[in-house]
Length: 254
Image 1 (tube, one colour):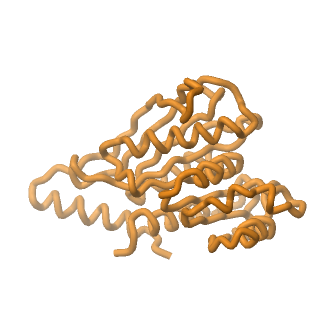
Image 2 (cartoon, rainbow, N blue to C red; image 1 turned 135 degrees about the vertical axis):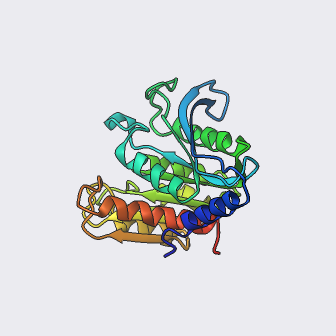
């Protein structure tokens, strides 16, 4: 575990710059609009959050964060999405969270998990195009429905370094791994975090899927956590697991 090391690196850099009279660039939040991938002409609503940077020229790694099912009230304002954003930004990683089509200020309508993959790809393209972000060090993080959409998008990005899925929706019955055939095309390093009390995701079934396709993924059962991480301490533990994994693959070891 590399808990907090990326944040310590950022703080060290800022301290060094201050000693030489340089002004670090403060954390920055920007509301934005961008297009979903493809020819659909759908404009999506999102938020870019940049961490403290040692200089205006410094580039940081970044992640797209995908929210849970819109049909069940999921939006980019979901408490778990916001918690992931805050922890990642504290670790020195930019985030772009967004509303899937038909949610909030995003155009279009729910597309049964088909067009939503293009929403993720559009968000990734927008993040990579930002001058403050290193386009080669961008990953995807998703929660619940967002974890599934994020993984489907990851399968279509050959150079994606890292993907993390929280509460990946397998259901509790035994799955047919071939229903997740797209996993075969994922080249990114993968992390799955699922609570042992999750009502919609099974550690056993996630393992069945990644093993079937020969993937060397990290599958972490979080003791006592349900799908919504309501048990004391589980939300913080989950966000740190994700942030440590993302930092390891987008920033690297000191």
